[in-house]
Amino acid sequence: MNSSSDVLVIGGGAMGLATAIELTRQGAQVTILSRNFQEAALHAAAGMLAPQAEGLEPGPMLDLCLQSRDLYPEWTSQLTDLTGLETGYWPCGILAPTYADAPPRFTGDAEWCDRTTIHQYQSNLSPDIIGGWWFPQDAQVNNQRLAQVLLQAAQQLGVTLEEGVNVTGFETKNHQIQQVQTTIGPWQAQTYLLATGSWSQELLPIPVTPRKGQLFAVQAPRQTLNKVLFGPGTYIVPRHNGRIVVGATSEEVGFAAYNTPGGLQSLLATALRLYPPLADYPLEKCWWGFRPATPDEWPILGHSPYDNLILATGHYRNGILLTPITAHLITDLIMTGQADPCLANFSWQRFTPSSPATERLALAHS
Ligand code: GLY
Image 1 (cartoon, rainbow, N blue to C red):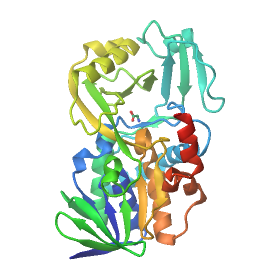
Image 2 (image 1 turned 30 degrees about the vertical axis):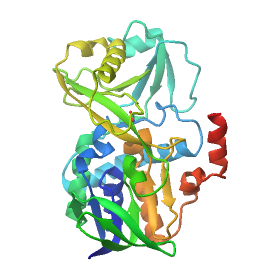
Image 3 (image 1 turned 180 degrees about the vertical axis):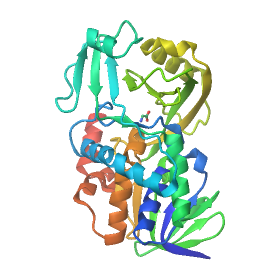
């Protein structure tokens, strides 16, 4: 029996690591059980912090994403102070060019650029671009670096990290988790946090399914872009060192863990149309990952069917963006027992058969 800590975090991706760090800072003893750090959605992303460019509808999800975007400067600088490592947070803004007339989407921190303005503002865009939105407050973080920084911070703070451990099931009694079964034996804690992303259904019947994204990266000879381009069907994310990350497909193909010629062909076509200079840069690599999608594309956060199991999963396209706010809200919930009122919007119960959200989804798909 591995009797561990105050909190046992299942899943060593962005949510698991960031929440473990926050919990530890607040005095909890935390263990993370991680099956494979490399398969976390954290690595698959391009690191856009794009609540506005993603076109989220006004409401609780947009509010959550905006709050999290606001936390980024301080959150990343604290991580850097702790570890001495840079995350690549870059408030570079996001330009969303379009090929067809777009109705105004935002009146707040967004600016419509007409054809002349957008081509002056960003050279070498497709000549078919007729205008676009500029979102000055959207940003990016280097998700590959963030992964290393989170790992290092967790280790420095004394989080116990068990890598290569698969949690295979829960033993429950009276709506409580008694212990979890793992490939190295049972583990116990006072509180459990499920942060297993696309693989959540292996442990709990909540509707989280993988949505595959394929990406590629090129290495430009110098930094040729200084803002993210978010076009129809693709995004182009420049790093300071000239690397450009391009994403992403969105495929319901289960856990098909490979790049496909068809996926890359469609991604290359849309990306090269939007920003033709990409065609001549050295291709560095291509890869894929699995976004944890829920039916309404909002995360599942907060209480679960078990009193001592908390959920932080299903962040779909916005996991990197939502990492700091998730860590903050879930830590508060675990440490104080008080749920922030906003968590009610993200409850797993919205998917139970009689919930209003389930009925809305059924109507939308009928
Ligand atoms: N955040 C963008 C994506 O998931 O493709």
